[in-house]
Length: 277
Length: 248
Ligand SMILES: Nc1ncnc2c1ncn2[C@@H]1O[C@H](COP(=O)(O)OP(=O)(O)OP(=O)(O)O)[C@@H](O)[C@H]1O
Ligand SMILES: [Mg+2]
Image (tube, rainbow over all chains, first blue to last red):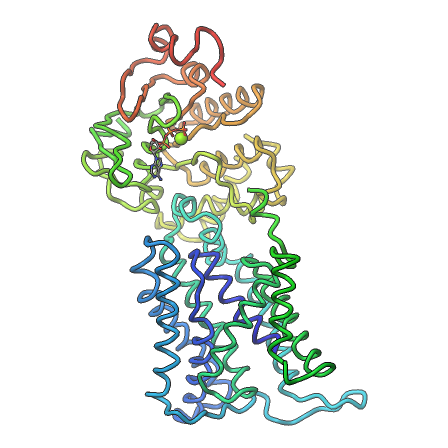
């Protein structure tokens, strides 16, 4: 679960850093990703791995459209109009899925099946192992992409200083589009993992609030913070539910959020950069 | 003539920041632009590099109209702008800051491999101008001192292999001995064949280093001529050279 939060939070943080916009539609995009993956399996009869790839690509395209519709026309209007427009998109998606996929929740099978494997006498669901492997692979990919490729560095440059990036010869608006596409692709992966845990329904969009909790706990604006924050929120939620009470499952995550806001508003990774510059 | 700015007007919303400004930069020279706070110096550089668009007037570079082009095209044509306040990428290492300064060169039509090789050569060239940067090549931008950041900003500008380098207040906030060093390097870069336009509040340094100078006051050019003559002019001495006392 922590990983799902981490992925959603990462999408929010990347867009925030690059475009300076808080994207309130990220939870709905996670939900849409889960629906799209369901259709890839049920309607297109793709095998699991093909469905994942197809969903990620389709959602990246959705990210480009989303950017064009909700952000681009308002990019000089300041943060509030864009935030409102992302909320609008989120409402549109949460209701729009009923039109396409009906009101019944859909079922998305776990990507690694429902088997378990026994290690040292403990049985672990294969799905959890698949999620962990995928998480590690994705983090390596991301570290490589942002630090070693020219495209990744250009996107990072735009996130640091837009005007200066333009002076270097970087097409700023194109990099912002890529960032939106990348963040929505992350949302698709989060949706594919979230699907089997919840049912595929607009309820998934509520991940948004946990993703925000994760980004704040990690330090808003920090990508490693989003990952650590996501896992942290997931753990607190699971342990709180297990050891104290599962009826208040959501309360544990928000309790954590409130504690951080009170005592360490800059999060775990309080940005040294913004203090210095 | 390398650059010709032809009576441009520039506005921020309804506030006019430049009023009919015209100037020329000759190939191979250092041209300086002096003026006090808020005169519009940075605005002029931003308009040349495409961050701002003039409401009227025109800008030509090597005989070609460039006003209205986006900044990423202007840098590809050969104008590199080193902005005020350095604007180093704080999360990038010194090396990555230099490399990102060269991205415009992938538009030159040369094979990518060749450009990559040239970039590595140019990094060495920047390191030979600024040996301090070589010692800190893996250090992150935010952790550099002000002087090192300024050197990195100039070095990053050079990575575009510009024909014209625009420098916005390179001496800002530097200790006097560093100001001298920065100006020596500016002269060295110019001697190696890059034309330079430098904006300064430190009028004495700028006038001494440049061939030609313009004085900007509240959005208008009020004086221009060979730097050696401006250095002697009573008007400039009274306002900008503070009767022998260094400005700031
Ligand atoms: N983004 C902006 N929005 C509105 N007005 C601006 C903006 N940037 C600059 N100005 C105004 O335009 C005028 C010229 O500013 P500019 O930054 O070009 O001056 P400058 O000569 O570079 O000054 P300094 O020496 O302080 O850097 C000033 O009156 C300033 O207040
Ligand atoms: Mg200025």
